[in-house]
Length: 197
Image (cartoon, rainbow, N blue to C red; front, side):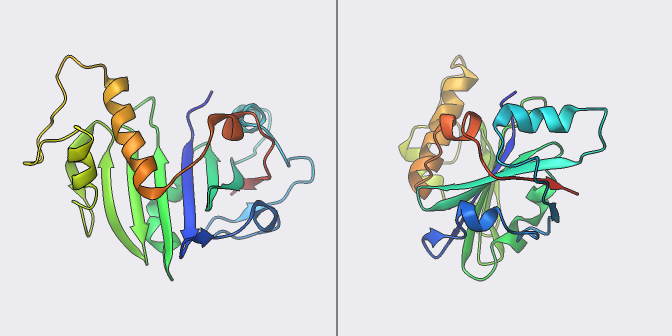
């Protein structure tokens, strides 16, 4: 399984916390309470899913943490309920981005918050419907990438594969915010992890 909810967090252009600092935190800016288990960390993507899907235990959700490209990141496994706290996470100069792939119930959702405000959100592939304090924040990039026309309507051909269309939107989000998170770093690398309750 590779569908998970992901966070990127940046404080005034610098890393919000390093993976070493993250591995010692017991409470997270989004209100999670983390339970440190010495047998849990560091783990891979597959190991996180095995913990969440193990019906023989009552373990709650899992979060793996790290940093890459000037952003800290947290990957939620399980229910991933942190998205509702995006504005809270972004207070005091922090930028926070949340991407929920939603493979079982598309579309994938993108949200961006800064200084305690929900700035801009939209569904990947549903960029015509944007919301937040600045819903058109990424409109110039969406137009420049050929995702939308200047009037805000879809620019992509209806026959185009949704994967190709989604790649355009995801690439412009990565470029706009300077996100760098290689798949191998998320899936294969062992990262500090916590059980979330």
